[in-house]
Image 1: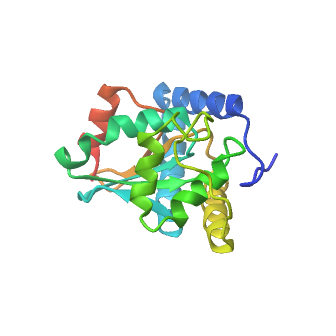
Image 2: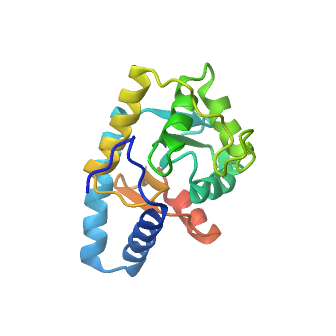
Image 3: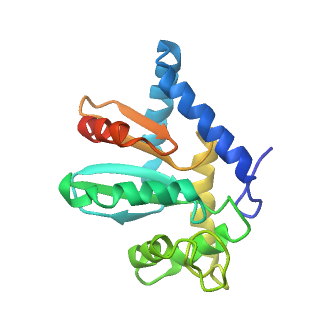
Length: 200
């Protein structure tokens, strides 16, 4: 079934998809690893067509698909933020609006803000403390979504869908050897250290 930015994906399906992708990546089966490598390379090549919010200015680039209401994306944010300066990291947060009914207007509020990074960080800093009392990201949903913003968010979702991704967050990056790699879900501290050590 196709999903667009106005048709939220059931949270259970997202989480089951993330778990399945994580198990596949962890299996170490050569065919699975080769397939993931090809998928990661194609996804990384598409990142110049995505609209993202940059956090940090280091030389190591990490791209993350996220939904403003995703609790696992918020966990990843909390893990990555302290590492931005120490590891010369920059994270490009690629907004999706698909998890719940308020995801799209919250993603739009981030992209339509005069300072996108400040709006993104407000969403994360105030997670589960929105003024309207709703769970999820803390930014107030946009009352009006501009046509251009809707196009940008739809393009992000198209990239996500075209590369057969499941669940959020999804990370993709280039390794030092030049090959691409990806990870679905929230890595453990050990996995995150290994990821950063291999990052170009």
